Length: 45
Image (tube, rainbow, N blue to C red; front, side, top):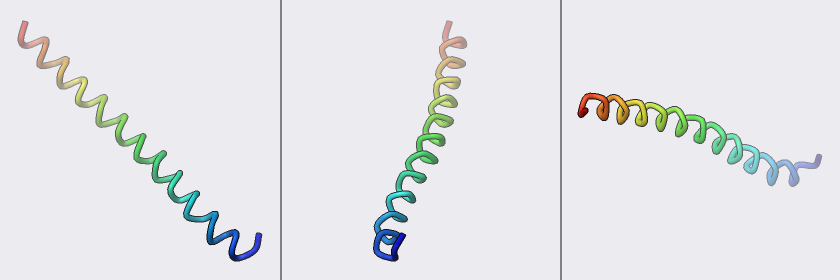
């Protein structure tokens, strides 16, 4: 792979990796928020 292809390829891989990591954090955060809502709903009964 020549230098110019690498310059084009590396940022693309970095963006994909950032999206995967961000999605993982978002899923964890949403699960926590859903658990809080469920706990609040149980207490409201």
